[in-house]
Image 1: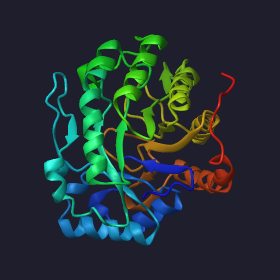
Image 2: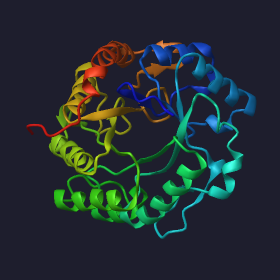
Image 3: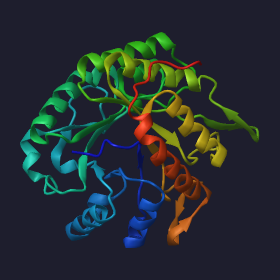
Length: 312
């Protein structure tokens, strides 16, 4: 059973795999990361013995992993689902890591639309039977997704900011709650932008968080959310430590129990990540280390309460 006694910190792109060594795992643990996602980043392209070594090393340093593993999935056969994957119960025996102490769960389709929720609901039920006590991780679209995406998934078109109403997004969340039985609602919301060299912030950031937090409160689920730790487009600025800490503590004000950094280690077309080649620890890595210590201190008190609302 994944650890539930702390505010969890996770990352996308946890490693630079052509330099993978134990020091990278030590650095990950020192930054406070204890629930990385592996598989979107080339993990399953490694030799099997190297995959096993990494999970063993995670266990050594108290880290658990969520795996995006094509070997236990099949494509979603629904219109608009290019690249979307579902758990395939017929392939469950392929999970060589099923009983590994560092195995926390599996990730499936990213940013689905309402069109996919019924099949996702079935895949979650199948997954729970095959991997009892493990996490079936699904990350939902943010409020600024357009209506086509809220219906048919992120891959339908480039996200057009401010193209959907709060009421539409409420329906999106309520359909997820109705059809997909996870213990949490997970979403990404990225606020740090730039315009003509001037720092800007997504204007409805707190409103977007509030809608997700309310859906979690009303359905008795935990709130999980991605935080921005890099840039991937000229219109998206690299967060500094103030931006980073502001995101995390704002999420805590709305009851978040787990936060996923997008992204942690160097990857193509992403700049300003906390961790670089040659074990480079950048400003956001040091910020994460400091903040993780703070979160560990407040976790016992914080997790004893459920969020009931915040002034927005």
